[in-house]
Length: 280
Ligand code: AMP
Image 1: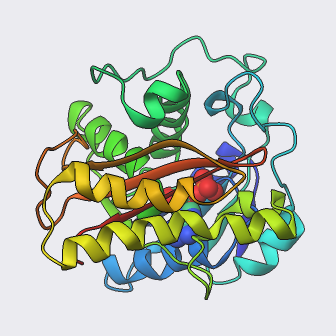
Image 2 (image 1 turned 180 degrees about the vertical axis):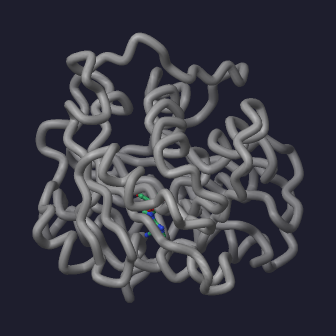
């Protein structure tokens, strides 16, 4: 694995590479991130140079969010990402030399803003802007993201389509802890007690899925089953628990195979996301 911190260094290194697969992350790597490397290699038939980026993007954090305390451990990330060809870890100055705020951004105008977009205004503009920059720097044919952030993946697909990036987006499955908790860099924030309560998210999704498997198709009933689990867990505050269609993640009255059940909830000070695709 090569470790590169500058845009010019990465461009020089990639100049002769014809097939490139990009895996963008914010670091604090876990097995979920590492699964994306395998997905990148598989998608490229083993022929790609796989570039993983590690960059905690200030643009996608709102005021009062966890940008300053977000876990950062580049030495551990270098050890864990030994299977990538290149680990690209630019500093903030390298990606945003205009002292933090780029004068031009990619702003999604998918109306109305729903779910994460409604709760975190500016978040997806931050994500799309940094990913557009990474796309232009790396010029990959393939980019791999996790279903864990399914709304992000939906925005990225929309960006690639709207701005004609010649890039195939791959969305890889959610990797979970043995007890069902979706892996996340933010799980380190959880106390032992909160870690136990956080299982309510995956249990709530499982409850909705059980209803689906039993033949229930009404979204309101599926949502009620999931919310009941969350409401029965003290210390867990629901932001939303919703069933949406898979393309644009718009709400639906009747669930079908492929509909996405999404949950966002706060456990203490930690906001957690999870989701499940019905019929998978
Ligand atoms: P992050 O570092 O949290 O920005 O995540 C970087 C990429 O890893 C995103 O595409 C995430 O969706 C993906 N990811 C995060 N957690 C998981 C997980 N548990 N399983 C699979 N992919 C994940």
